[in-house]
Length: 65
Image (tube, one colour):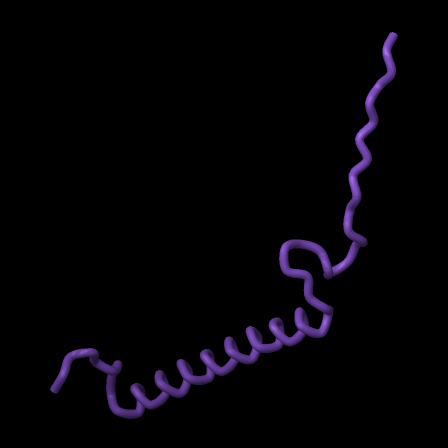
């Protein structure tokens, strides 16, 4: 039998700094916090808009007056 060829593959260390664009953990946390804060702000905006529409007596129309 002939000699077998072994291929050695180098892998990056495990953790958050893997992939095409590695980033430190604080960047991941900052992006996550921005997404959560943006979602909360959007939900508050929608709730206030619905409350004002109910106070005026109906849904806000998209038709121009």
